[in-house]
Length: 140
Ligand code: FES
Image (cartoon, rainbow, N blue to C red; front, side, top):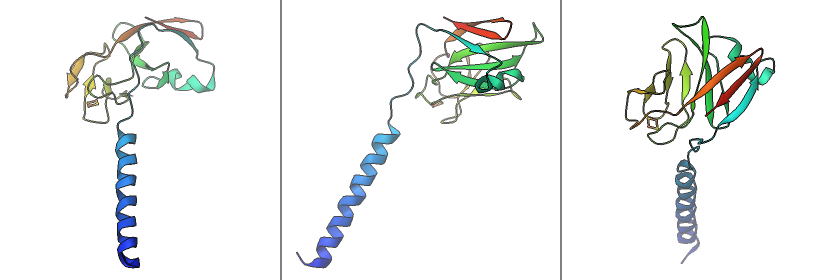
């Protein structure tokens, strides 16, 4: 093997190694759907300030918590499992459409967690929310 062949084969090996690392990284295990949920969010804490506006949302304990417009009350909160039921991507909330949206393959969920469109096979798990003063409790 001359010097040129050695460099070519070395570069090919590096390319395969980099592709392998990228493939393993893209197959990270999705966030688990929490079975037991019991936490609180202090709405005066800057980390939760998004929840002070309709359409805002935060993530905590593998749950997405969003402040939504509600037909029943002036405002309310919704807490759903954050991992899409299709392949586990993390959903976000779109206040303009009142939908939870998956960025990976376009899955959409309503504010009850039910599938509206796209490939997700089942609903997101919904959790109870209770606001007391500035403390929002989220429970299974
Ligand atoms: S992972 Fe959400 S639609 Fe595919």
